[in-house]
Image 1 (cartoon, protein in one colour):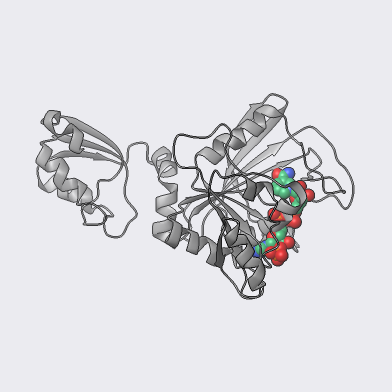
Image 2 (cartoon, rainbow, N blue to C red):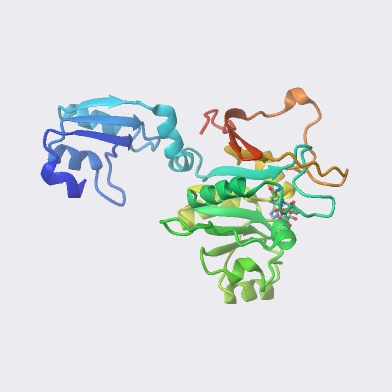
Length: 313
Ligand SMILES: NC(=O)c1ccc[n+]([C@@H]2O[C@H](COP(=O)([O-])OP(=O)(O)OC[C@H]3O[C@@H](n4cnc5c(N)ncnc54)[C@H](OP(=O)(O)O)[C@@H]3O)[C@@H](O)[C@H]2O)c1
């Protein structure tokens, strides 16, 4: 806005999010827009921040500007999903992504999962990593796969944090995660994690944060990531155990499920979600499948889960 002021008089302004009308890290956008002489503002979606929530639009209208609100509401809400989820629930928006075979397995019975999908599907995962503030896994995935969790190629913005849910601070000091400098590694540990291990991880460059007593609390860790690290969107790339906790606690907002034509078989080969599961199909939570895309021989299904406040975020 500052850069546009000289040429903004009488112009139409198109914005994704309702301009703010309160003092936060910066002054109210509405005042800058009015001062610049903009005559019409087209707003993609309202700001769920209770300090704004329609107040920005009202301020513009009171100053005599023409305002069109709520155009492309659905598409714009997805663009601000991280901000909206944080405003509504104090949590980041979580996209759970996994790859499974056509018989519903995320690893072989021997624990091998590389690779289930082909190169194009895997490059879509790297694109997703470039869109989030943090990528998250459980220690089980680190021990099995030794992933780097970096977007490759890197994006233009800051590299996402790499979050590891690791109650006992078992992350190996020689892991690829710690060897790779791009993207701060954050290890969420429990209060019971051995102090010496936590110290060693800190010395190796990780940020070690306590979140939970005997086991890391997924919700507490996410809240801390949002509050302390400004994390608004997380890509969850965990195995079945941590994914089950996220789902059971209602922390997943969106699912990206890659399906390949491979068949692993094996009664001990895991599916995407562990835990006890539910008993009756009628009781199952259901994602609303919004999109399907093909990546060469693989497909991806994109689905939304209704969040606790009843809104699809
Ligand atoms: N195909 C795919 O998309 C895909 C993706 C990822 C992994 N995998 C496969 O999945 C397998 C690993 O599965 P996994 O279930 O062990 O991996 P995981 O879910 O990533 O990690 C599980 C570990 O996370 C820790 N954890 C910390 N807080 C937790 C919480 N609140 N709830 C649950 N767990 C928590 C637990 O260990 P502590 O209690 O010690 O902290 C737990 O054992 C490997 O074979 C891997 O290849 C496949």
